Length: 328
Image (cartoon, rainbow, N blue to C red; front, side):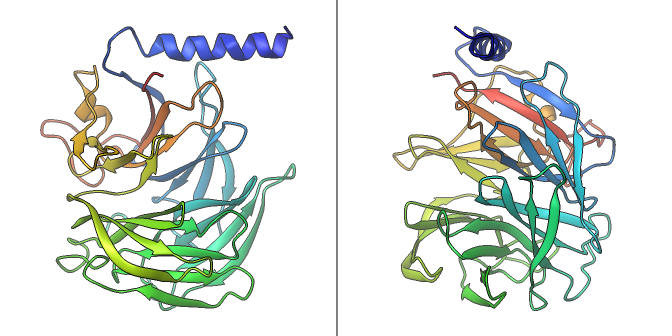
């Protein structure tokens, strides 16, 4: 056995041990940013490193989840923006990211300020480039590729309550869905419509923070087919991810919990062993599973530290990156 394999096995074992012997999974904190910092989204690179976007500043950070004491490392700072939001992998180590001028303190949005950019991390120095300006959009939040290798991405506009399609090659864009399923129930900033969005196995899933989780068939050209179906009725859903069984794990920052939609369609709350789980999960914004053999059943969670609402009796803190080891 090579020393590399031995080291990986040791790291995997250490991660599992930190989860504890309880049948309920434990939450462990990987790192915490300075206060105030709003972490908005999370993506996992093929090498297992975590990428997080900041809503409170236009910065992309990387975190090593296998380091005993992870420290956020600045990857890139985006120009002419107050923050960055959604992130999706276009191809290995190449990501599409939404950015714009939205004040997380005042709620003010600069008109025609949102765009989609590319972050190419394949070389020694990250390369940033503009994919498309979307001046008709208000707040471009979640982003998803249609499928691996597709020239289209889908964007969730939380304020306008629509889903946009952007052609990565021509920079053309259009609305593919504008309905009750995507619109907020009350005007922004109290109401938030379409938020997280992910394509999976020919379906487009998206959350509406005011209404629930939805699904519709999606074609290779990024257009939708058939009717929009309700997967789960709930409020406060932000970003989400899938496990190997197709179960959906949702960030629910308004309620300071992680939600789960089982393969049978039942909505439940993830039960953890931590007495302080609501504080740790305060303002959670995004979730993602690991991609290595060590952490495929580890759910990584990003939070805004309570910026969007506090647990009674607590104070706002810097955004956290957490890990929940769900076992085999």
